[in-house]
Image (tube, rainbow, N blue to C red; front, side, top):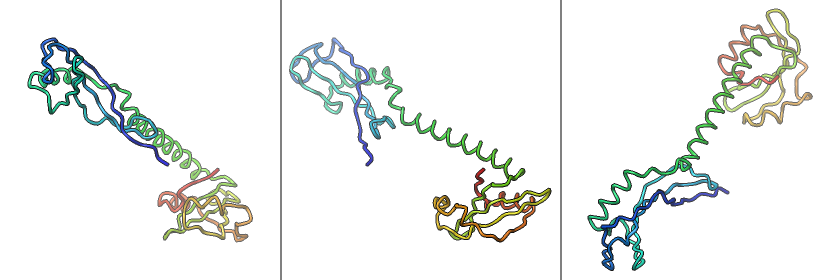
Length: 200
């Protein structure tokens, strides 16, 4: 279950001495405040939304929303708004998403670097995860490496999802038929993403 919602955070308040409360007529008793809301997921602030202004009269306890403010109040509020900056932690979710994206990209880059090394220097026991097309996935295993070629055996089973590869990648599922493939052909299959992952 995803827990999400929104929250309003107080940014700054001022007490202009010249402001007159439109409700009770008190002078200097009105507190102007600016607030900013944000949406959150699992209580982690994800993205700031709009800023709002509210005035509170300390004398008559009236709450005055921006749309009901006098011209003088609106002028003071606009100045307050221009001088106020919301808390940076309201962007926590954005920063977290960027960090996760950065981590994923770095991890993908390092994985590709490793796989490039594996494909150029195959080793006995390497497992190649294969995209056979039309939602068909399987594996092949290296059993011998020669100078310009290698011997592999294919998995006798296929799966219709790449996530199901681990379920069929067991020793007893590999055929006894041995196939010889050149290193050039191996590299071509990798470049075409027929071999889309290498496990060593």
